[in-house]
Length: 319
Image (spheres, rainbow, N blue to C red):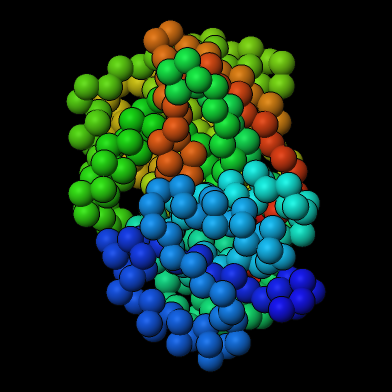
């Protein structure tokens, strides 16, 4: 097959374990629909964590520029990291789409991608291409400095603790929309606020914080809006800092996480920025797109309008 022909084809990366095995169980149905709409060429199944990163790098080297992810937010995150690690072409030459079979699906929700497989495939076939920002985070894992890219939201402090607990339960086969909320309530018991220094484009903030969120998108945790005003292509992170707060107040205020009114709370502050440095005592942990990473010191940078994604043409995106 000629390179020009490969570049016009959709590569499909399937996570068979996504959504408690729905990626595998429903693949026959999804495959038939992809063939029906002329979107199926090469298919790869992930075999382990981080495998989608290597599949993506190899596929781009072979000439593929359009990738469909059959999975959830975690699989999409791995594909994004493959896109930015590869050196074959600019990331703006690549287009990503998703058929959601995961549990959170917050990135798909942002772009109006339905859970119905045929409806999602129709959007891929005729949908709108949106050039969105990407986030980059440098952090530590022990004494080793590491790096990760993300498309949606990163969280520090309490959020990272909840995600880590939820991910451990996913590994045991537990899933569902309520998983994040359940682990949020369980994690409250032992969690302690952390003294942090946050530097947003040179402005220094020092305080005891409960949790911090940095959003390109606005949804996380299965539909919560911790960064409700985030715009995916404005070249800025939306940053939400929840300062030291009573645990009972967290439970009372849960509704605000879902209805977009989070900044009405007196303990919650909102900022925007391009480069954010975070240090803490004791260490504060970080997650990105629902993937548990490492700990402080941490540096975030925005990469404006850096990758193409397929979105529902019927939704109105902020710009």
